[in-house]
Figure (spheres, helix red, strand yellow):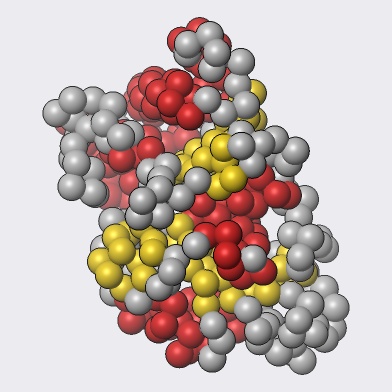
Length: 339
């Protein structure tokens, strides 16, 4: 889905030939497998984009060096490093110190990301959880504009969420409110990457969809032939490949998708009952890959939520994969919002 907040016709939109250091901030999105950066103006528009870099996830040192290289690549000739940098990361963050407290899909604990990236970029760095960053962006510039009660559910490699209630981004006692990917939906269920079992993420996260597909292939190699053919091997199967083979009519992929829809609907009903948003935004790469998730979730909410919550509007995110980097940039412009 094209991102309406990105100028130009491609990922490498040039923007102004020379950008004033105060005209833009550098927004960065660090996920479990990728990093992207952009020069972002105060109106949320991306003036220049780095494109996606895949990192090897071999430890904080190598990943942070990849982040710094990616960030510099989006500046372009003649553009100085902006004086403000914000980074969204797939993990639990202490925004006061810029420390990544726990990032299960990166394998990080207590990594001082702000300090270490600041040493590479020679600029102060603000750090925010990626789901909270996406929520900020969609609330201020995207699908949640004008609403005062919003929940943004992010479906990617992992599952995250964040809430705006009464026009205020909620924090929680340790800045981790909204970690709905780790609420239990199946008692004694699948092992998650966090210390829990049966989490929503352990069923609908991208890594979990791929894991479930690989288990099904090992159990019945004949039924998994189409998935293996598309991926090249059972270990190469990803959630997006499951979606592609599902669209081609494969029965095993269809079964996995239908199971994922049921688990997602269960989680979404609980989220809407608990947070009572007027708008539920579904964001992330899995929603882009399977937009049918939106009407399925909406139908479940209409049928299964308590009456006061059942009227929530369910919409797809508007900012696509750039939401988290735009939200990180918004934090860099407004650092007190995550304190």
